Length: 164
Image 1 (spheres, rainbow, N blue to C red):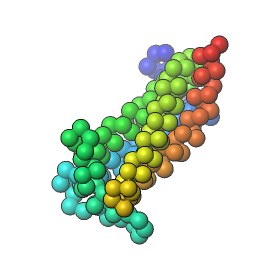
Image 2 (cartoon, helix red, strand yellow):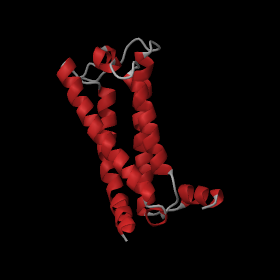
Image 3 (spheres, helix red, strand yellow):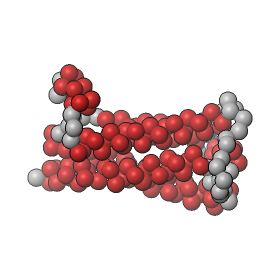
Image 4 (cartoon, rainbow, N blue to C red):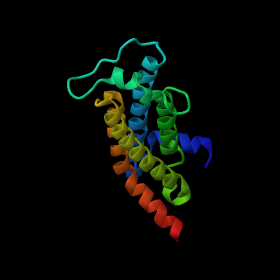
């Protein structure tokens, strides 16, 4: 597909798959934004992370050993990259990619399923190690879970197209 057609389709076409993909891009960028906020705290640019009432203590969770134990880096920076890749996979390809390029929606679906499982496991670890949750991380978890539901129809159709 030429870039002009891709640009037109992504911006102007109205199909159920494309509408769901737009939501996935938006939810993924919400995950990026949550990661950016926590990254600012984890690198000392912000001095505190405000929380709503509830079982949240984002500053304590995001300053704990839990948040720095992977790859010698603040974990929120990995979150930014991770959700950026998900947004990229959701935006890649034209409106008919489930039939034209079925590996793209399958890759997106697998990535989103991985995001959701990883988010749930990290939330479990957060609670187990800190007896508190990071509200920003939990917002990203909800975005991942919603994305699973949104990705399912196109991923299923693409898998069917690959089997044929």
